[in-house]
Image (cartoon, rainbow, N blue to C red; front, side, top):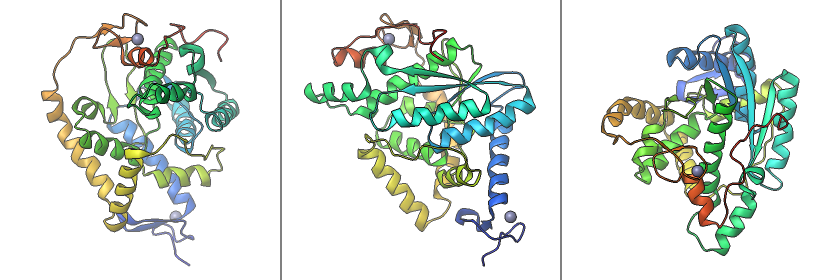
Length: 319
Ligand SMILES: [Zn+2]
Ligand SMILES: [Zn+2]
């Protein structure tokens, strides 16, 4: 029997990048410790703040929600949850129920904001329109831009001081690599434990950023959390290729993911110095903050022959 390096109980996980074995209890303790350390080290949350957490129902966001409940109780923070319903048949419809159940069992207010209600079309319908119009863009582009924008707006309407997203180490390193490959400088410099923004934006924080995906999954499993395990049907292309490449790298050279993250974090202050300043305005169409005349969401909708139906997201009845 392989034993936990720390306590001698039966090992449940081989943390190769650190050269240690962990039992179930020590793994849970370690994840909780890293979560609290990330918050303290980067001052992600302050006592008494109102915190919105984006919950899809997947393992990462459900784990984040449970970790936050305990943290918020200690620090006197208030917690609300937001789920974006993009309208992905057979995928999101199931995960919303999981998000709702978790919120209910923890006694946290839960809000659902749907693409269909706000934009007049589900992501599935947008994907069909994009194909019919032969645009170069794939569904992940629409989803990424629109979801980010709705999450920010919902958090702002709910008067949250911070918006938590459940990006783990793997997500963050994939994003770093993707922006390198695409030479997307402005997206690259927005990555990090916290994105502190300008007027109209709720600061986004990522307390799971230094926890590998496997460890978040194991944490959820060992704590017996109810999670939605399916993979989004639209995932593919370069995202998958970069993920597979990073996993291969990590398998052959343990600790590579952390090294990429550390390198990026050291470079980031330098990046900030050379990012061009731009003026913040309000989108002419929807009123959301943007550097252009029309925000990216509205521009994408226009390209699909759609337009936004509602400006306000959170009505008293949408919880
Ligand atoms: Zn142990
Ligand atoms: Zn707009």
